[in-house]
Image (cartoon, rainbow, N blue to C red; front, side, top):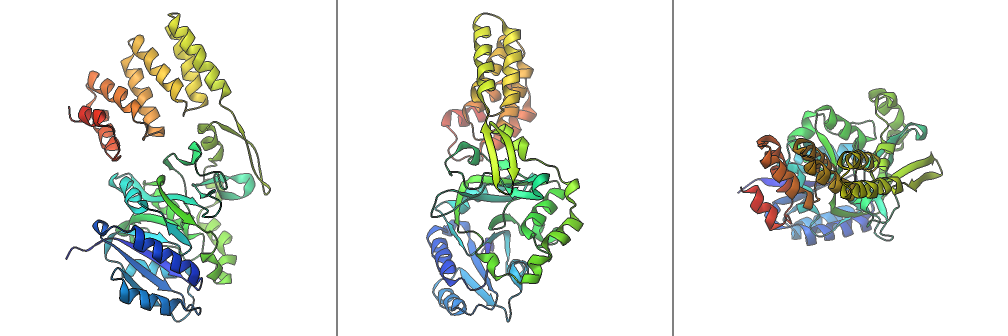
Length: 389
């Protein structure tokens, strides 16, 4: 029999109604082809959770569970679940989550890239449909990490772009089991999810938010069972290991990439201002200059438009066209590569950039783009044909 491919580790402490909903969702969404197993570590629940888990494990072969004599907290239970696993991958999942169809298949996609160490899904509040978590960023005025775009509609483009962050929320995290133990598993001092992500980055690996995978998350339910002493020591112990001054403040960078300016950040919330008008104005000016034969002036303005708003597809397309018209194929290729590093799912730009790589006999970048593009099952057939040339 083949070993398990991925083990889903769930720590529980009371909250039986959440655990019921989570297990039901897993039973509906786990495909047999994934060779997944569910391991639950119960922290001495007294609300019927042990009885429920015993009943479910007898009826569902994929579920195993262990009960602790006392509440040892999230970190201990998660590490114990990882030790019980015998699989290539570990997926840590809070019991107050409801995975959506296709969530695990999508989450596995980026793990084929050797540069990615840990992956997390788009977490959505189930009742409101607003974002619970789409990545963690740092603002020193706020004292450290905070969730970017929390409570915005989950349909917005800014929360539907795969992106590497410094940290992700521990409600749902996927990584290789070998890496988990190599970096010392979950720390015992709290803020364990952020610490885990930072340790992954110390190995030179990426922490990827991957919104193609969607998981509903009630939020702050699992932590209600944590021992108080653990919560009280979170900030002090964490800061001793990772002083805030040594971590890059990055929230403004991401807002700028998405066409926003950070107006203010305080305990009252984040205030953003949409700021893409200048980029669009410069793009239109570049197009006008291109039509008038003023290629160099057009290139300069298109470059400025991309710098202001890197997600401006029109600006990048205009810049590529102007570079090609000017015979600057190397510059055009670099612009395409840069854009696809920001929007790797933007299929139309693969066609132009791959052809530029072929024209310049750049096999290295062609191979990198090929590997990146083939991660997407819905890649157009025309591009697949080009990849086989």
